[in-house]
Image (cartoon, rainbow, N blue to C red; front, side, top):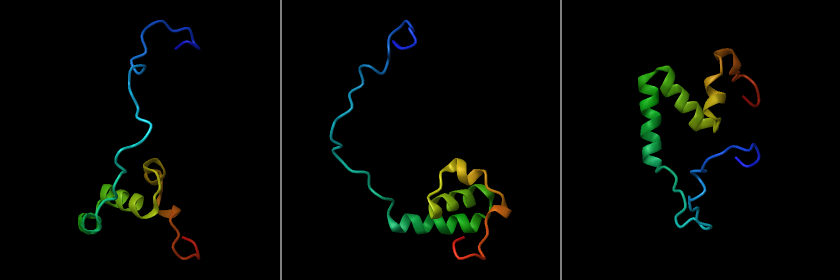
Length: 79
């Protein structure tokens, strides 16, 4: 705001961010991941498959959502 000479109050200025995170972020339990995977396969629709691609490849949502079928080539050493 100061850089662009914008008048007004910065609503984020009073937010406290702790230096140390008290509790680490826990992974999704294996049983839940397997259930999600089975549900994605059973539904056989674009959104569940998108979720499966993100889960299996760790792509960002924007990367996976812009894929075409022809972009995925499995018959190579590194798909």
